[in-house]
Image (cartoon, rainbow, N blue to C red; front, side):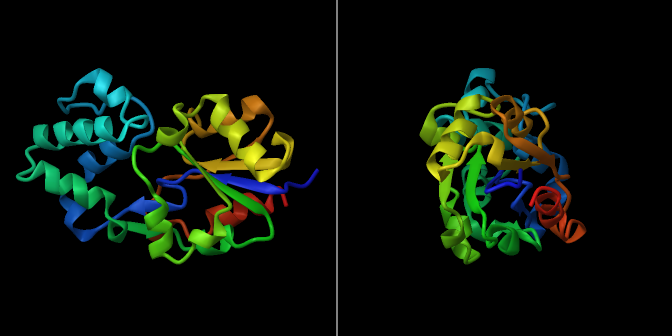
Length: 203
């Protein structure tokens, strides 16, 4: 059976947090964008960190705590820069991957509205549905997010492919019958066509 829909993760799958000002904060960026676990070596309340993708207030508090513990001069300002659409770069094949004949959904563990990022890159209209953890009240790999995405797209799970950079989080789509393809969270210039390659293996 060929697929009728593709579910995409957001961070490190379609877009990556990249900016010259972040070059000196490589370990910090990896900690802040890791899909699971407490950031190693940074002070943060465990409960707040666990709730960061369910509550925008917790998202801000958790990240500001980490940034402060890392010695950022202006943790609040740094946090705002992380949410700025100008800081998120699209992978080279993102626009094309979102522009196929297939139905598309973004399924993300996230504590803020990422639609502005898609709008800035001119691809907002290529996404049929956004299924975001803070809006749905659950985080991947909870089956509900994948089930909701398929239901809203009007497809059966077996007709959908999930693409993401986390085996643990995004790979949870297999539990409801979706197919899954793992992509590496590489810098954008080092991963030119992984999304299209993933789709081609199931189209």
